[in-house]
Length: 380
Image (cartoon, rainbow, N blue to C red; front, top):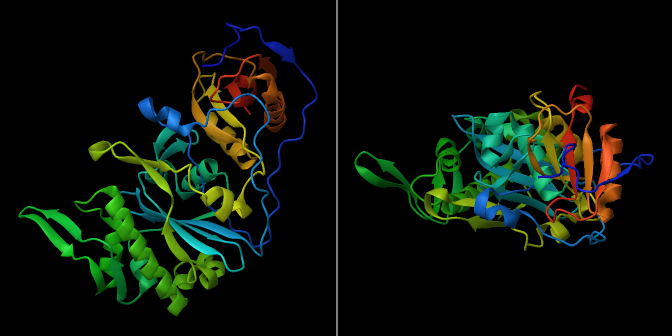
């Protein structure tokens, strides 16, 4: 927890003129943009969310490049309970590289403004835009739109029986015991059954379900390639996507499993080359994003959510949003965790339009800037 006004740790107070906030890269007029972002795990897995680093210059990442008319959209399939059951990120460089990345609904990350949680639950907490923002934060790429597919929409999208190559059997639990509803291998399914494969996990593990979902998404892209009318009539937002969505290579978003059995969760893999190579053209920044925590130092509710969105869209990575120990702070405090992070703190000050900046001589190791929000900013 950062030092507060009543417990200074030899901060060096500074009030230089605010510097320009890091800008997002320019995007083409048809950029839809998508994907998104991972932060902190609770308890024992917390450290796997952070890439601890020494105070110093941020390592340079591959320079983002706009290629053609880049597109990125997250497709969110909603279940009957309102929770997301399947998520797929469509990414295109506008030329020949078109991908559909299927993500598990139990992908654990920072849900901006709400703390650690499951990506599938973000749809219940707010709507698909919170899913989009969470992925932007986690992945550090632009995502301009999220499209929600309500129950029945996938069947409408398919329109007719579709062939699905199931990698494993679909087994459901009934009062009479486990029943194989669909065997592994290639088979033709009516649209409603194909949608069920996306909606219901069955008795298998989340990973087995994810692989089945990938097979269904492949069938959906094949169907779109054969006939785009259904996609356009379902949602006008599909219009600009249809040409390349039907050409997309479907794969699973690189993830790592955390825990086993009933506590099985997944986090975005940091070892994959996905972000640094495959979708670098959508990166928010050419350098590593400053890591920020936002602590509500007031009794006003809902303070961290809009601030988190502003910071994320400006190229920061929010790794924590929660209440501060003190709840009656008048003036906001922006703490640079280490001298090398002073500029990042000044950028935050410029973005928020206020707050006192102090510099801690030694950094926290897990965040670059700590923000304790006071009433001066919260009331705005």
